[in-house]
Image (cartoon, rainbow, N blue to C red):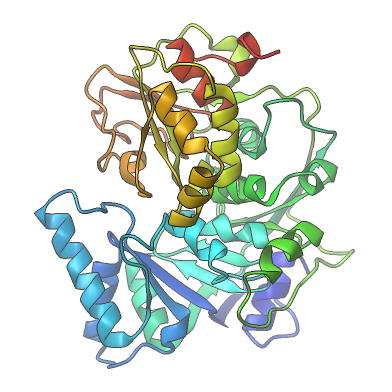
Length: 418
């Protein structure tokens, strides 16, 4: 069995599962946010049960429109807060919270071998820790909150092997953009993407989170990494409960095996209006921008902010650009503050926000007007994703986003850092 099949079989109390099997699987974590939780709560009430199956396995994170931007978002958050208080589930209030997919692993709420589900498509982020994590609709989440189970079809697994070593300024973001550019936005439709190879072994945990996060942009059900020493180091200081590490069998059957040599990959930029519309940064250097966003559940971790600060230090954001930086959690914000990164950003002329999804979904804190262009470290660049349907979003890694903020156009750090 593959890594995904091993985890699902264990949670379905079966010796073996195969792609296409329908299973009932126990869940270790159920998560919802301020957009999806209110629907899930309404459906939960309709089921007619009084209590969630286990308050320690249900997590509510308000992060999309918080701090609340208007009355409607305040009502959503209030409903969620009251339900969390009534049920005694894990809840992160403004001031403790972060972007859900940065916060949950950081707080040790998702561990290797878990089955984790969330009412948010980027729940697949947690696959970086060797968990089977996937997004589901609010109705499925309501059923899981009531029963502790999910009903699902076992996905086939595509194995992606990355050989070689990454060049300077090339990161997990570039690997996943390059991959989506190659296989397309439906190239892994309802499949688990299992990432392997020496380039993956060399990747930091933060880089792996970025890759797992964007598995959904290739249509995948989950993106998953094996557990190694780096994973164990990350998890052991955070885990409050025991966990099991699974490994794929040497004779596991994959629907596809795709191999890449990453040694010559440049930083990638996804042009409008698809994460698959990728080009090397060297081919898109003359595009002027109005805004640069560095953060989100894709690239809002400490490593990402360090890279941005390295480029912005002693330099200024271009006068025609608004540079918005969003730490992924309060802990990331605090660590960045202690390290002097926040000072670097402010001296460079960037705006630093409290943790929020904000501009990524065109919510607040950086909505685009018609005709404006933004380079962003987020995960989607569909029409109207960040605001006006007549705006454009370009996806890139934090190094390219920071370099572009300085130059006023899409740029590589190589242009001024040798």
